[in-house]
Image (cartoon, rainbow, N blue to C red; front, side):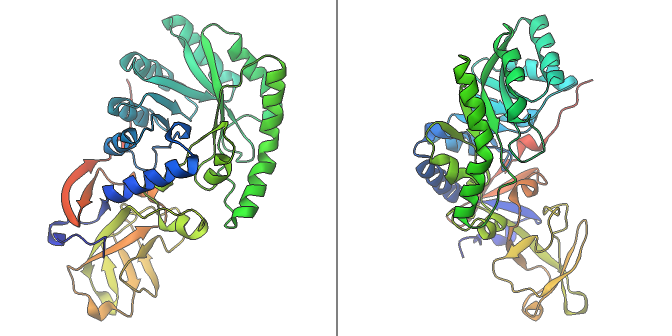
Amino acid sequence: MWYKPVNESSIATPCVLLFPDRIEENIRRMIHIAGGAERLRPHVKTHKIAEIIKLQLQHGITRFKCATLSEVEMVAEAGGKDILLSYPILGPAIGQWFDLIEQFPKSRLSVTVDSETALNQLEIHARDTGKQVDLFVDLDNGMHRTGIDPEVAHGLIASIVYNQNLRFRGLHIYDGHIHEADPIERKVHCERDFEAVIRLTGQLEQDGIEVGELACGGTPTFPVHASYPSRTLCPGTPLLWDAGYSKSIPDLDFLPAAVVAGRVISKPKQQLCLDLGYKSVAAEMDHPRVHFLELETDGVINHSEEHLVLSSSEADHLSVGDVVYALPSHICPTMALHEQVYVVRNQQITETWRVVARKRDYPL
């Protein structure tokens, strides 16, 4: 039982256990799929931990993708050389962004933009501070969340290219709407939705505009985009993996490297009550939200803030105080619920790591 530390009695639950040897193996597998570390720009939202950034740096990965300003700061402090914030910044966040540029001159910081409104605010700040800002244009090729339609993106890109305060670095294309379990169907869907991007890049090249980097996809489409050498790859979940992707994307072979641990705190009516409430396990998905590694369950009776009540034929075999282990269905939001995690090496808890980038700073 690789997931069970020998010093189990020292575990304060609920908690997350991380396994660095497995994380490193997942990094090696990511690099193998990509064909080289230089093609990767892994998303850090999955883990939000500086030590995991340093593990990737040791394997030659120098580019990273973030979703929050705190993540950008964490990656820069850990030594990341090229950091993309793939989230539109508006309001006070623009001032914070330029503060980060000033604070970390050794890291190249870029941000996505998908509207003239955000672009104008960034340009004004760049002009006022005398700093040129690096931009990726975020394209919507089917996700319909953020991003501009590739069919009408040319004008926004031209506004960047011909402005001395701005620097066009490339295109960001996240296709999180593509998640077919069958890899062939997923590839067909990915390539069909990418056609609009190809038309746009062709038009830009005809107009003499250098396209720059194509930062593409997430985890499900990782192997699809990997087959196109001109694209940069942005998987995040493979670093820690989870039960959700293990089931829904079975062709990706990564190791579970994050385990949730909880305790039996009560046994009401021959049921099991655990301390794995939805303040410790991501609850945006339907049950099962956790997949137990050595416990057969018959279903969830109740899931609330601090409690998870289960029906299990094995209830009689467990005592109050026993520790149970599970893989979360969705590791990314689960990690964000924890301020620190246990680190397990050779089945021994050796230290804790801070989930430092779960914080948010609010300027006055």
